Amino acid sequence: MDNLNLLTKNEFRIVTTDSGLGGLSVQALMDKKLRINGNKKFELIYFNSFAGGNLGYNSLKNNNDKLIVFDSALQGMMKFNPDMILIACNTLSVLYDQTEAAKQIKIPVIGIVESGIEMLLSKINTVSDFNVIVIGTETTINSNIHKAKLIKFGSDENKIINQSCEYLESEIQINPNSTEVNILVKKYLHEAIKKIRDPKKHFFVVLACTHYVYSKNVFEEKMSELVGKNYTIINPNEKMADIFNGIFANSNSRENFVTNRVLSRVKLKEDQINILSKLLINDSRNLVDALIRNEHIPNLFTFDEKLLSIEH
Image (cartoon, rainbow, N blue to C red):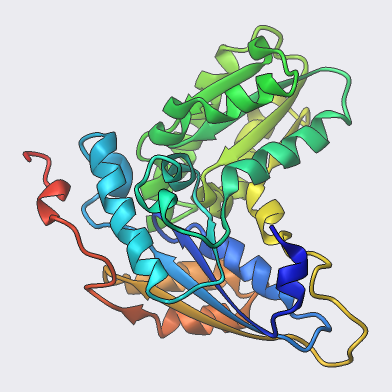
């Protein structure tokens, strides 16, 4: 990222996207952190790349279908002339480099996978020996991207366990504290821990899906039941929200002016809005207001709707 170029701008438009509403937690934290002395104007646009159907991207038939839909979403984002795109979604971060749009987009596009890796590497140095559980959607886990990058930085592959969590993202989006979420979280954590050679070592659990942060308390409760206090939850959302930390601050007494918009091609459910509003309010009342008055734009991005059909 060219920080010098950023410093010369007085108005900045940032699009944050996710395959659902998990990335709102990143935008809320970013809003909170940007409200510092600086006298600049930020327009934060949340672009919901959820395509439709029951399970979103992970329900699409194959990787090519996922790329078609995400390519269309990226084209939709560029219509808003952003200065930067933040992909606050591990699934979409994995897909981005494979899209046609990636070859054409000239502005910075930053994925959350790198944020998670950086955060984990900084934490690993604080303990002598450890295990890592990377827990995410099927697309993210099947890519093996977290494990590959950790091995590249010198981690022992035998200490890293990938655990995919079918249906968990969708259940969290309905209700982060539901009985179903509690059952699934314990099930998947138990499966991961059984694969560990030495379960007495410290556990780092990487929440490799932005939605999972809404259920962080559930992950903590279930890990405590399974291994006691011998664990650390890694929340990449926090790291991504720190991306502008210190860049725009100056001694000016005026705060940066920050506005929020929430855009979606699918109609958001009122119960989802109510649940997420309670989770986001402490970080950004402004974003909660934008979520409540979200802009439903059916043609926000377009693609062949047959891709959402199981039979196609």
